[in-house]
Length: 464
Ligand code: UD1
Ligand code: CA
Image (cartoon, rainbow, N blue to C red; front, side, top):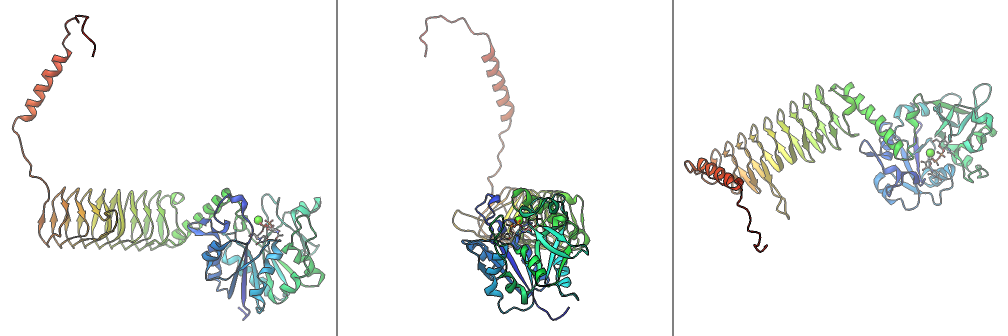
């Protein structure tokens, strides 16, 4: 690479009315990350020198979400060229290349931006590189008008296009790379004499041509990469495409997905090698899975770290702060929250373990509940290494079970259990000899008496 620097301006001042949402459009998540966040991540990968986001009035939530990336406000929103102009104050001293991106295209890849920048720096020194694509249905998009040699002459917006121009299949993705030293002077030339009365960024191409500046096109193969998300249906398509990428990445990095299409990843899910993920598993934010872990079908996992060789599920729920140690087993219908489960521990059936530590090789029986909340405060449960908690135990926190202790099934444990002790909290069992047989005999006799035919009624009894 040359020493030329690169900046990015992300346009996000549009109203996004078609989302029908209180949430600004660019904050709607794809794979658990706001759309605009995906663009910022790609720019990070490219080590872009400076980024500015252009917002509409009242978009404080977007400014907060992109912080510390600086924002500029475009008010009123008078078109895409006007939006770039709104960023001028943050770009005045910048003399490198400038990428203009749209905040609602979360699928744009770093590779495509890199190609645009490389083209911008090629020998003919184009003032602008326009990202082009060939959509199945070009309606609504700006068309790229090329001359006989394939040189870009102009971009004509759909509304302004002649019949002949509408037949052009090569469209503008809206995304462009500019020579930043000439950009703002040229934007001054853009007017709003068009169907929408807006300042179109696309007009810079014809203006550049008039000035004798070179123009170039970079094409993307897959139109979905530059898909703009305008409504919820497109949001769902973007989600599906992103999930496809995340699944492919997981498999490329050495995970087995037995039914890839049914696994939902978060943008930040990290999987080690030889991990196996069963069908219908959902990953929320902040999950790290080490090598050789098996996540069986129907698990929901967020904010969790799973160490090597652990087995989770089927039907397990790991909530934020769950740390599952090496070789630990978390079985069906087990919920873990804010708890350290040390290596080799087993919690195999129907349990809730929250605000707790479960020591190495401890065995937590079916139906064990850590009672961690009294309606006001959360309290901690500590289970020592090698302890054995019998089925259906309630551990009323704060409470400690010492190393190697055994808790008898059905106990409600409210006091600390010493190491290697047996704790048993239940009423003594009593037997009444023959009681069940007598009970059945009496019941049978009473039922027979009730079913016997009744004597005829005297007829004059007072009804009650
Ligand atoms: C734009 C392009 C069109 C291209 C299409 C690709 C222009 C004039 N047209 O059309 O050639 O085919 O994208 O999807 O550029 N925005 C602002 N301030 C404004 C107006 C828009 O920040 O005043 C932002 C929007 O938030 C959005 C982006 O710019 O992120 C694009 O605006 P939009 O109105 O969607 O442009 P299109 O009509 O789709
Ligand atoms: Ca659009």
